[in-house]
Image (cartoon, rainbow, N blue to C red):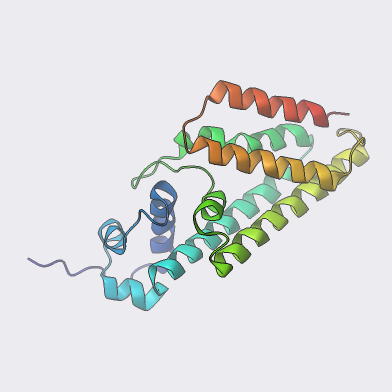
Length: 199
């Protein structure tokens, strides 16, 4: 019997979330439209009609990924003391095996993966990831500035430069994690970076 797929009223948000997890575990290029159809139990026509082609679907998933990440980043860093919360953010790529879903284990940061796979030849993907990186540094800069004012974080460097360095650390770690990661070494490197921020 032929599969009929989901009814026209399928949950768009839930479908996009499942697609995000699939893209995150396999990557853009390695995820076919048929993979999406099979994993999401949605007919091709419904996918195209709701989300557009695979590239458009993928970029919407990346935007969703960042929206969720940004909300969690802001909430996590709106605490005192800051450094333990910041360490938790930085260690996320080293703990990706904790986030395995029904469609697979995530690899790296989806924004970082998009940078490696689609940037710079895709201008829209480039804009999406560049905005994400700017938002990360803006949010972390604000948090570091507040922590400097309370004396928790050293004022030997500008918070903007500190935030930029943390961006390089978290996304570098994310890319390295795709090839396998020595978790102990990664956590030691993060602790070194955190210690350098202490007043």
